[in-house]
Length: 219
Image (cartoon, rainbow, N blue to C red; front, top):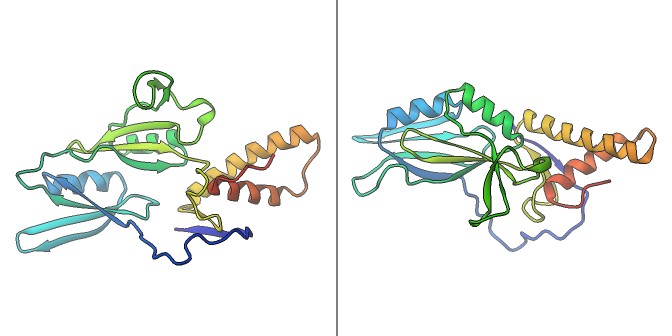
């Protein structure tokens, strides 16, 4: 399911003169295709295909809401299992995503964030990022081969990350989560103004578009 709205922004289309390069499939080696198939089906990922040609075989899954699919192939003897680490899975609500994966049988670690300290991102701290800051909250799990998946909560995108002409939601759930964030922000807006905002649909729309494109959020 894809829900999209067009922005009224008049910014220049940066893609003019460029060919689109869409990352749609990533290959990950596994040691046991049947075991991998069972694991990812239990997570609720969509099985796209189970390719067979003679003794050769591969399977392909697509995570819910993802535009990129995962092609799993049998590893050769020169490749160690579990080489894919970490693979990012972007979610709108880190706790909701973690809870669902746990219900489906994945061994997901606790939600964490990084604080100031040693290391490239600072020290790892239990719990979500303060105020659930976008890009700041994580949780991880592994498949039977040790390939590591890292959940990352993203609500407001970095500027330029999303085409400013389009706001899209991969599912009704993602749209509902975004509407809840807009509702909470709009509640603070009404507290500041001290009056009910009769034009709240316009405010919500502006908030949803700005949140995804990385523009300044309405106040």
